[in-house]
Amino acid sequence: MSVTAEALSTKLKSIIRDVPDFPKPGIIFKDITPLLADHAAFTELVQAFADAYRGAGVTKVLGIEARGFLLAAPIAMALGAGIVPVRKKGKLPYKTVAASYALEYGTDTLEMHQDAVKPGEKVLVVDDVLATGGTAAAVCELVEKIGGKVAGVAMLIELEFLNGRSKLAGRDIVSLIKY
Ligand code: AMP
Image (cartoon, rainbow, N blue to C red):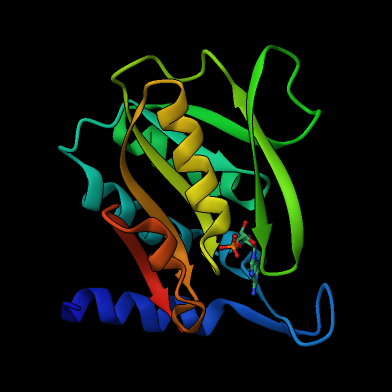
């Protein structure tokens, strides 16, 4: 990690709030709302992701419901790309493709519009936390199911002890903060 990346990581870590036993006992929830509320820090993290993927030909940035939306939108703006919401089952109005996956806490189904990514388009998948990797892996599969190419997986926080990378073998993963 470069000195700048390390300094950014330290700064972001100091702003993120740990909430023990949410949403269930034993989980330490990484609450990014203090970071979202900090204009300077939030701007820096968006720039860091944009710098990592500038020149990668990304035309769509996928945000995973719900905190992923908040990160995906400004990253997409910075990259000059469109934004695609990946939502919980039943929320999107048009024809969808779906994938079910296991979470660190429970299971869920995610959907995206089947025409949200055109065949051959380069996509960046964005979320706040990479935990077991099930969510991000399912979203990458959705993108590929409709012919898109995953240019990268951008995660604000990576919980390395859960080894989410093992479910994303061969993918380009950028995480700014590691625990
Ligand atoms: P996973 O599929 O296990 O990688 O879980 C990733 C998803 O669950 C992301 O959408 C995260 O927002 C959420 N998540 C998992 N663990 C945590 C945690 N400790 N703190 C906050 N969010 C989490």
